[in-house]
Image 1 (cartoon, helix red, strand yellow):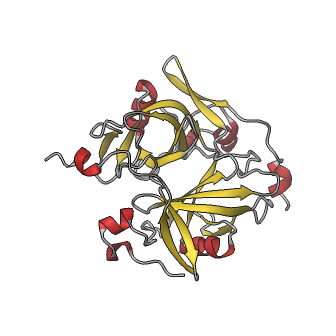
Image 2 (spheres, rainbow over the protein chains, first blue to last red; image 1 turned 30 degrees about the horizontal axis):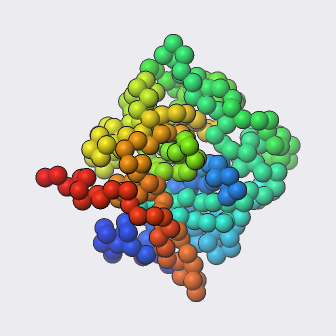
Length: 149
Length: 149
């Protein structure tokens, strides 16, 4: 699967056309925001390289690129929490993707065992910000899932 | 408003604690995903620098940092489509923010006049991806809003 170069299409084509020309950044990555199909809740945000994007589109199983491990990341390969692609959208300038997925396994997209990575709310008191836990109990124990020697 | 340096807190504090220590990237920016409070719909994604984040938290009006203009960007200053902050969350490693906002004006977060920047769906046919418009008509005419000489 090849994607056209954004430099080869007009600004109008990029913003309103039907040509999918994802803009990868200087590191070859594009942002992917992932939401739960059933509820629309934002689960996580990560990056894809061209290989991850192609694999996601051709297999229907979401793949990202891990910046920390510098390698292709089939989401859920270790934890079992894979993501089945339901819908993919692209934004106006085609440098971000919005995925709608079915989160399998125990339903936790986050490595902490939480359903969503956004489980803490920023609160302000006396001009000082702090975080308040704003989600339920984790759906799995990360120690048991990831620390397998 | 000062934010602690991520290097000064433990991994556990960063991921499960109450200390808000946003991780700005090498360009001093942090990702902000913006959703509509009423529906949870993802409207847009942009970046904030420290100043934009502080202004957003202290004024309740969303500010970003424009990478193309390299300057503080009070969302809606030109178009009138300001965003009132309802809720802010941070992700597990504190390098992304999730905003819940009330989108004012005509309700269009996107500079194209669309409510959401994610108005096109990626479709695959005969192994070839293309984009299909998947939203209603724009809520304003960008030519009239931005081209004012």
